[in-house]
Amino acid sequence: MSGRTTYTKAQLDQYFTRVNLPPSQWLYDVSKQGGSFQKSHLELLLRHQLTSVPFENVTLHYSTHRVININAKHLVDKILRQPGRGGYCMENNTLFHTVLLSLGFDVYLVGGRVFENGRLAGLAHCLNIVTIDGERYAVDVGYGPNEPIQPLKVIDREIQPHVGPASVRLRFDAVPGGLKRDQKLWIYELRQNDDSEWVPCYCFTEMEFLPEDFSVMNYWPQKDPRSIFVQKLLCVRFTSEGQTFANPDETQSKDPWSNAATTGGEINGTLILVGDSFKWRVNGVKVFEKQLSSEEERIRVLERYFGMELTESEKEAIKGTATALPLS
Image (tube, rainbow, N blue to C red; front, side):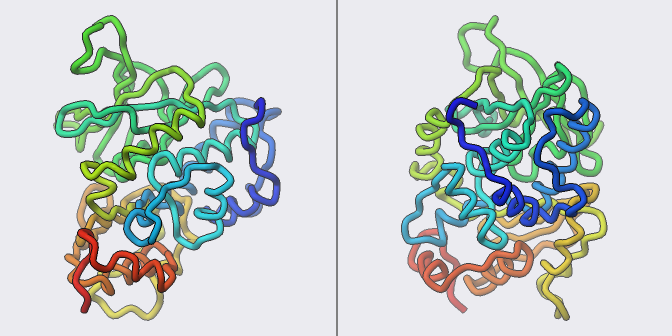
């Protein structure tokens, strides 16, 4: 691992607790296990990660510093020790990468480009490649509601299931805008149902990227005014079978986050907060959608549905900014 950060047993315990992993599944070294065990344990960890740690950019809106730190040690403090917190791609994937590396998985990080309105943006995405018994799997925990919900075989055009009627695949092909048509990348695509067109989401290389690469790549998403992360508050978390969430307009006898212990089951939906819009979709069907009219209402959603506990100074930090909602 040559100087690469890994987590201690105590830090792994914090991770297992944070993602609601049953204590009977707390393992610290999979390197001596067979391939089938490694694959099933990776799937288990991925489900718990996706249903517990949100894809979010709250720091860019509810903080005075508005700085995203992707250092693996810092992510312990931010994500594992702060209730309900997660991060965007380079945060969540760095955290998950460090967990997998610490557990003995054969894993490395790669860089990617996201498609925006049919065009490729610059290198500003990352994901993990895990190798088990010679088979490579793309593992991405930082792409919001469209990210793969299971380890994705790095095989050309093999269709794999997503939430509800949706499905995903990888296509090995040249990318739009490139002059060297013989240089191919892996393109991650999603379709909403069997009759829909395949839509490219992002592409990625097979070349390993180092933490120093992501330190450079991390600048644009958090600082450029054209970045969606600067323009809008985002918070997305997958839900699983057995979880129920009442409409925000309904009177509730208990906090919706109290059913977080049921995370880790089969993924069936997503809680999605974008700006002033909050919705829950299950198997491709919208269960509820709510337009949020005030900062107080949005903070309640972050607290009740995502389990966050923002400080008073964090709540104050968004006031007067372009992404703030009115005060009630």
